[in-house]
Length: 188
Ligand SMILES: [Zn+2]
Image (tube, rainbow, N blue to C red; front, side, top):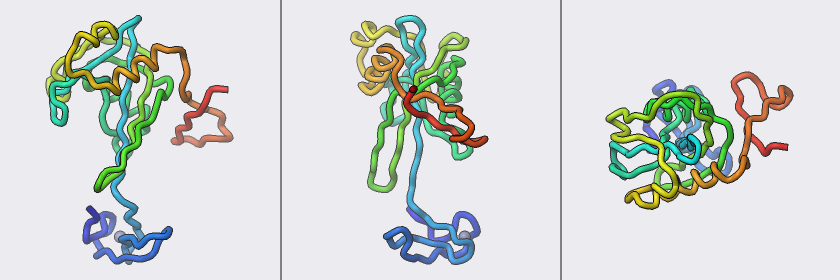
Protein backbone atom coordinates (compact mmCIF):
# COMPACT_ATOMS: atom_id res chain seq x y z
CA UNK A 1 0.00 0.00 0.00
CA UNK A 2 1.21 3.45 -0.85
CA UNK A 3 1.63 5.59 2.25
CA UNK A 4 -0.10 8.97 2.58
CA UNK A 5 3.27 10.45 3.45
CA UNK A 6 6.54 10.36 1.57
CA UNK A 7 8.83 7.60 2.91
CA UNK A 8 11.85 9.77 2.14
CA UNK A 9 10.94 13.22 3.49
CA UNK A 10 7.56 12.87 5.24
CA UNK A 11 5.66 15.35 3.02
CA UNK A 12 2.04 14.48 2.22
CA UNK A 13 2.02 12.63 -1.10
CA UNK A 14 0.26 14.06 -4.15
CA UNK A 15 -0.22 12.40 -7.49
CA UNK A 16 0.62 13.00 -11.11
CA UNK A 17 0.84 11.33 -14.50
CA UNK A 18 4.21 9.61 -14.62
CA UNK A 19 5.18 7.05 -17.25
CA UNK A 20 1.63 6.66 -18.52
CA UNK A 21 -0.09 6.12 -15.16
CA UNK A 22 -1.41 8.26 -12.35
CA UNK A 23 1.05 7.65 -9.50
CA UNK A 24 1.69 8.87 -5.96
CA UNK A 25 4.37 11.56 -6.18
CA UNK A 26 5.95 13.62 -3.40
CA UNK A 27 5.70 17.37 -4.06
CA UNK A 28 8.56 17.91 -1.59
CA UNK A 29 11.38 15.76 -2.92
CA UNK A 30 10.01 14.34 -6.16
CA UNK A 31 9.89 10.72 -4.97
CA UNK A 32 7.63 8.60 -7.22
CA UNK A 33 5.98 5.52 -5.75
CA UNK A 34 6.09 2.89 -8.52
CA UNK A 35 4.66 0.13 -6.35
CA UNK A 36 5.76 -2.68 -4.09
CA UNK A 37 8.50 -4.90 -5.45
CA UNK A 38 10.57 -7.60 -3.80
CA UNK A 39 13.45 -9.82 -4.86
CA UNK A 40 13.79 -13.38 -3.62
CA UNK A 41 16.78 -15.66 -4.04
CA UNK A 42 17.22 -19.42 -3.77
CA UNK A 43 20.37 -21.50 -4.11
CA UNK A 44 21.24 -25.03 -5.19
CA UNK A 45 24.39 -26.30 -3.46
CA UNK A 46 25.54 -29.69 -4.70
CA UNK A 47 27.88 -32.08 -2.90
CA UNK A 48 28.59 -34.90 -5.33
CA UNK A 49 25.14 -36.27 -6.27
CA UNK A 50 23.33 -34.65 -3.34
CA UNK A 51 21.79 -31.21 -2.91
CA UNK A 52 21.42 -29.01 0.15
CA UNK A 53 17.86 -28.72 1.44
CA UNK A 54 16.36 -27.05 4.46
CA UNK A 55 13.05 -27.71 6.14
CA UNK A 56 11.06 -24.53 6.66
CA UNK A 57 10.52 -23.49 10.27
CA UNK A 58 8.14 -20.64 9.42
CA UNK A 59 4.91 -20.11 7.55
CA UNK A 60 4.07 -20.16 4.73
CA UNK A 61 4.81 -23.82 3.92
CA UNK A 62 6.12 -24.55 7.42
CA UNK A 63 7.52 -28.10 7.46
CA UNK A 64 8.22 -28.20 3.72
CA UNK A 65 11.65 -29.00 2.30
CA UNK A 66 13.22 -26.59 -0.17
CA UNK A 67 16.52 -25.16 -1.31
CA UNK A 68 17.74 -22.42 1.07
CA UNK A 69 16.84 -18.85 0.21
CA UNK A 70 15.02 -15.70 1.21
CA UNK A 71 14.66 -12.04 0.38
CA UNK A 72 17.41 -9.74 -0.81
CA UNK A 73 17.97 -6.70 1.38
CA UNK A 74 17.74 -3.30 -0.29
CA UNK A 75 21.49 -2.73 0.11
CA UNK A 76 22.90 -6.05 -1.04
CA UNK A 77 23.55 -7.64 -4.42
CA UNK A 78 21.51 -10.74 -5.20
CA UNK A 79 24.52 -13.04 -5.12
CA UNK A 80 25.45 -11.70 -1.69
CA UNK A 81 21.86 -12.34 -0.65
CA UNK A 82 21.84 -15.97 -1.75
CA UNK A 83 25.24 -16.67 -0.17
CA UNK A 84 24.03 -15.09 3.09
CA UNK A 85 20.75 -17.00 3.09
CA UNK A 86 22.50 -20.32 2.46
CA UNK A 87 24.87 -19.59 5.34
CA UNK A 88 22.13 -18.43 7.72
CA UNK A 89 19.77 -21.31 7.04
CA UNK A 90 22.27 -24.17 6.80
CA UNK A 91 25.71 -23.16 8.09
CA UNK A 92 27.21 -23.92 4.67
CA UNK A 93 29.57 -21.50 2.94
CA UNK A 94 29.02 -21.45 -0.81
CA UNK A 95 29.85 -19.14 -3.74
CA UNK A 96 27.25 -18.09 -6.31
CA UNK A 97 28.37 -19.27 -9.75
CA UNK A 98 25.44 -19.11 -12.20
CA UNK A 99 21.77 -18.27 -12.50
CA UNK A 100 19.59 -21.26 -13.31
CA UNK A 101 16.26 -19.51 -13.64
CA UNK A 102 13.91 -16.69 -12.71
CA UNK A 103 10.38 -16.88 -11.39
CA UNK A 104 8.25 -13.78 -11.73
CA UNK A 105 5.00 -13.32 -9.85
CA UNK A 106 2.54 -10.44 -9.94
CA UNK A 107 0.31 -10.45 -6.89
CA UNK A 108 -2.59 -8.30 -5.77
CA UNK A 109 -0.42 -5.70 -4.09
CA UNK A 110 3.14 -6.45 -5.16
CA UNK A 111 5.38 -8.08 -7.70
CA UNK A 112 8.24 -10.45 -6.97
CA UNK A 113 11.22 -11.81 -8.87
CA UNK A 114 12.82 -14.96 -7.45
CA UNK A 115 16.31 -15.68 -8.78
CA UNK A 116 17.57 -19.25 -8.56
CA UNK A 117 21.34 -19.71 -8.36
CA UNK A 118 23.72 -22.64 -8.53
CA UNK A 119 26.41 -22.24 -5.90
CA UNK A 120 29.76 -23.91 -5.41
CA UNK A 121 30.20 -25.55 -2.00
CA UNK A 122 33.13 -24.07 -0.10
CA UNK A 123 32.92 -25.46 3.44
CA UNK A 124 30.68 -26.35 6.32
CA UNK A 125 28.46 -29.15 7.51
CA UNK A 126 24.75 -28.60 7.06
CA UNK A 127 22.84 -27.77 10.22
CA UNK A 128 19.59 -25.96 10.88
CA UNK A 129 19.38 -22.44 12.33
CA UNK A 130 16.29 -23.48 14.35
CA UNK A 131 14.23 -20.45 13.27
CA UNK A 132 13.98 -20.19 9.50
CA UNK A 133 15.04 -23.83 9.11
CA UNK A 134 14.33 -26.70 11.51
CA UNK A 135 16.36 -29.30 9.59
CA UNK A 136 19.07 -29.13 6.95
CA UNK A 137 21.06 -31.68 5.03
CA UNK A 138 22.27 -33.04 1.70
CA UNK A 139 19.90 -35.34 -0.16
CA UNK A 140 19.92 -37.15 -3.50
CA UNK A 141 17.01 -36.81 -5.93
CA UNK A 142 16.19 -40.47 -5.21
CA UNK A 143 15.93 -39.63 -1.51
CA UNK A 144 13.77 -36.59 -2.30
CA UNK A 145 11.30 -38.83 -4.11
CA UNK A 146 10.72 -40.74 -0.87
CA UNK A 147 10.18 -37.56 1.20
CA UNK A 148 6.87 -35.78 1.57
CA UNK A 149 6.40 -32.02 1.34
CA UNK A 150 9.27 -31.25 -1.02
CA UNK A 151 8.82 -28.07 -3.06
CA UNK A 152 8.55 -28.90 -6.77
CA UNK A 153 10.47 -25.79 -7.79
CA UNK A 154 13.41 -26.98 -5.67
CA UNK A 155 13.42 -30.36 -7.42
CA UNK A 156 13.39 -28.58 -10.77
CA UNK A 157 16.30 -26.36 -9.70
CA UNK A 158 18.37 -29.31 -8.45
CA UNK A 159 17.87 -31.15 -11.74
CA UNK A 160 18.84 -28.00 -13.64
CA UNK A 161 22.02 -27.64 -11.57
CA UNK A 162 22.95 -31.29 -12.05
CA UNK A 163 22.31 -31.17 -15.78
CA UNK A 164 25.37 -29.62 -17.37
CA UNK A 165 26.68 -26.12 -16.75
CA UNK A 166 24.06 -23.96 -18.51
CA UNK A 167 22.64 -20.72 -17.20
CA UNK A 168 23.67 -17.11 -16.85
CA UNK A 169 27.15 -16.42 -15.55
CA UNK A 170 28.82 -13.32 -14.18
CA UNK A 171 29.97 -10.94 -16.92
CA UNK A 172 32.93 -8.92 -15.74
CA UNK A 173 33.95 -6.93 -18.81
CA UNK A 174 34.68 -3.51 -17.38
CA UNK A 175 33.14 -1.58 -20.26
CA UNK A 176 29.79 -3.20 -19.47
CA UNK A 177 29.74 -2.89 -15.71
CA UNK A 178 30.79 -0.38 -13.11
CA UNK A 179 31.81 -0.91 -9.49
CA UNK A 180 28.70 -1.97 -7.60
CA UNK A 181 26.98 -3.32 -10.70
CA UNK A 182 26.32 -6.99 -11.24
CA UNK A 183 25.71 -8.35 -14.73
CA UNK A 184 24.74 -11.93 -15.51
CA UNK A 185 24.44 -13.17 -19.07
CA UNK A 186 24.83 -16.13 -21.37
CA UNK A 187 28.32 -17.60 -21.46
CA UNK A 188 29.85 -17.02 -24.88
ZN1 LIG B 1 9.44 13.36 -0.36
